[in-house]
Amino acid sequence: MLTETKVFDRIGTESDQITPAYYNIVMGLTLLWGFGINWLMVKNIDPGLFAGLHPIIFMIGYFACSIVGCIIFQKSDKPLISFLGYNLVVLPLGLLVNMVVAQYNPSIVQDALRTTGMVTIAMMILGSLFPKFFQKIAGALTIALISVIVIELITVFVFKTHHGIFDWIVVLIFCGYIGYDWARANMIPKTVDNAIDSAAALYMDIIFLFLRILRIVGGRD
Image 1 (cartoon, rainbow, N blue to C red):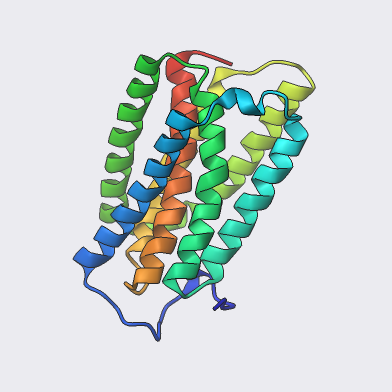
Image 2: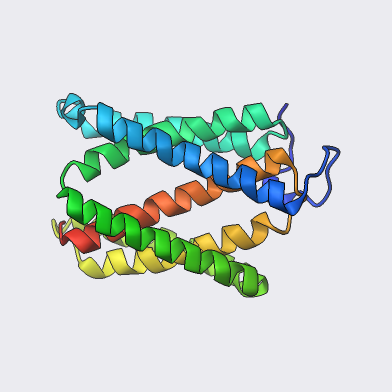
């Protein structure tokens, strides 16, 4: 079932609520599922399979699948449907991670993973301690991210260059998003469906944070 109310706008629910501990366990397991699927894709799918695929075709498929997945998990109030939408986000992002990770030495990837993990935990703690602060900066984060993406695309495709400062800015933005999404995840009704939806939002934040940290650590354009 799809509703007109997005997950983070829900202030009430007809579904059974669960304990905070169970809620966090469901979020954690959902995140682990997504990361596990990505790990299996990196281990078992040869990134060379997509070498001959035109970038525009890949990007169209990537965005189409991701957008449909986001719409499903944000609109649905049924755990299984939300989990389906979550997987529609996990799969294309997994392919992207696979193609990017293949360019780096395993030791660099491990460093990036450790850094991402520590940063994520730190931002979750801050999100719990200062939820109102992260709510206030949510709009600024969105404007900043859109601005950086537009400017970065112009510098890459028009001026054929990439400035490392963009990676650091995007890292800071997604740090903010992790704190914000964690804070609001704990402000909505604690149901299984909301736990899955919250995990999906956090999953995307963490994956994009990891990709940028990887580029910084690896020193690659």
